[in-house]
Image (cartoon, chains in turn red, blue):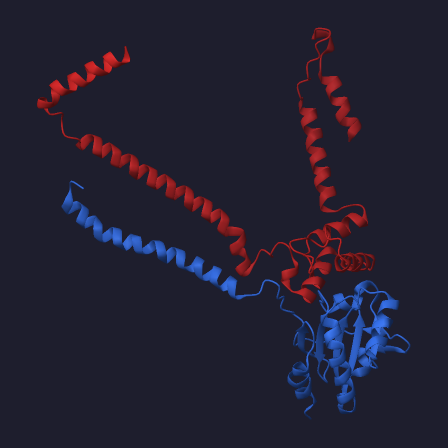
Length: 183
Length: 186
């Protein structure tokens, strides 16, 4: 991967056309794009299935709530119980269990409370959906209210009574004095 | 302001709309109020009324004890630690007394010493002259299998091997009378 990425720019950049001493970053060609995509895919695959078992232990522990802590995952907590829970995760992985089976085991013992993120189903869906609903509803409310205010301003401007001719001398005087003041 | 009739017409609509605001806020307040009535530290155990997970305890100075062998007895399974002061120190005499009083009536008291050193555990047992079965829990296997999150926690398991009751905090004489004794009725 790394070899491919480093080779792409040197082929694409034209050193002959570049003024010496002024290196220009090579324009990313289609090959560089493909390489970057491949890189991302590889990283995603690596993220989804950590090669090292210890990484997987940390990953699973990171999604479990440490029962004796305040707002800490089993992965982050230095407490003895969290340490032992990591040990249990390790043993179960060695016994060939999957992440889902291990999570189900802890849910079985501690309840769904032990999951740091609630499962996306049933009543829990509210926690996942409501924030977005709130943002959208708030946006719509702001748009509607702003529009209504703007309409009211326009109506008020249109409905404003025409200037009274009797006021004109006073207006003129105010203008004059303001001018004088400005000078 | 200027168009009074129009304003009045809108007035009815406005009061109806204004009533909507508290109506929209009420469920939220209800939810928060409900949140205040619950104890954020109380973690309901999903294990109550389920089959007690099997285990084998390596008893200090004794034969390994397996839950399977205790089927037909009422088992009081207590998780403790020597560093758990004062709750474990308060309940140790209660447990010992219950053991002496009920052992002939079909109660077995089992103590699991978790997150502890053997020396400190044995010292605790000597201090309270505990005569019921006590043993360590290396790696916290038994404790985690019972969803234990602190000490002391006590599980009362009925004659059929079902968890009848889970108690968090020091076990008291009242718990013995209310949660253990009724299970002994034939």
